[in-house]
Length: 127
Image (cartoon, rainbow, N blue to C red; front, side):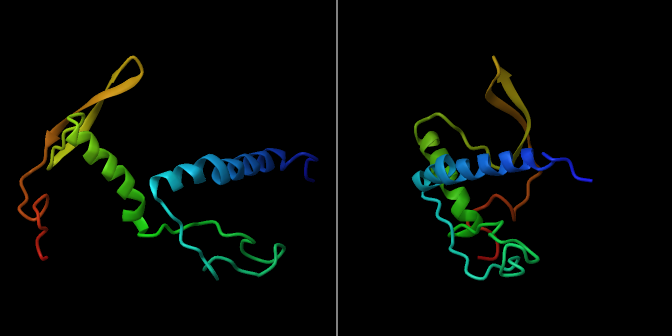
């Protein structure tokens, strides 16, 4: 037997997420230049009615430029920070520890990766 309010938290979460996605998240993505691909006939749709099998609305999004389209604004920001002397790139390194002071990350500690002539070189091998 189902409880009267069994779905109340699921409904609250869904409404809160839709409000966030349609407002703050969407405007932030627009400001970053991240655009989503309109999906007509998405693969997981299933039945064409809300009561049918599958989802009545899409549950995934594909950005223009796929993964690189999502990463590009963050890469541009990192390059600007490096140009301003606020960030240094260390190629062929890995992060082993975040340095935290007063609750904020202020740096990283890491180690040098093994030399590999195929990785970390430009242009990449095979191009």
